[in-house]
Image 1 (cartoon, rainbow, N blue to C red):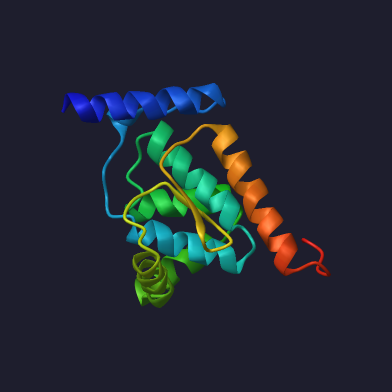
Image 2: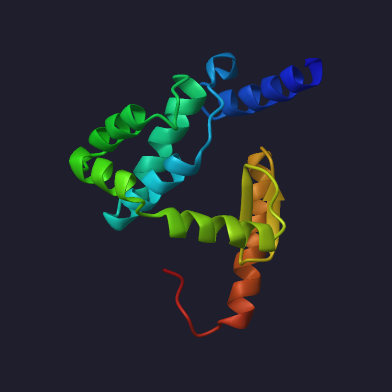
Length: 155
C-alpha cells in the first residue's frame, strides 16, 4: 500500500509540474472498455483528442466512473457530440471490434500498462517521464523517419 501511494504521489507531483491536478484518492477504478469505445465514437467525428482529455480529467481530477454510461454521455455532450447517437451506438455494440483490435495490437507490441507511448512503432516510453525524455524520443524518432523518408513532408 505504501509503495502504491508513493507511486501515485510521484505521478501527482509530475502532473503538477505541468499544471495538471490529480486526485488519485478520489479515482474510481473501473473497466475502461466503454471509455475506449467512446473515444472511437469521438474519433469518427474528429474529436478523439477532446474526448480523451475529458476522460483523463474525469478520472484523474474529478473522480468520476469512466465506465458509467451517464458519465460518458456527459463527456460526449461537453465536446459537442450527440448523446443520443452515442447511447444508441454503445447499446448496439459499436466499436467493440475496434477496441478489441487495439488490445490485440498492444499485446503484440508488448504493452502491459499505461501510460505507454510508441514512436515510429519501435521507440517506446513507459510510465510518467520527464519532458526531456519525450523530447529526446521524439527527436530520435523524427530523425530516423527523415532518413527513411527523405522526400516526404511531415504533416
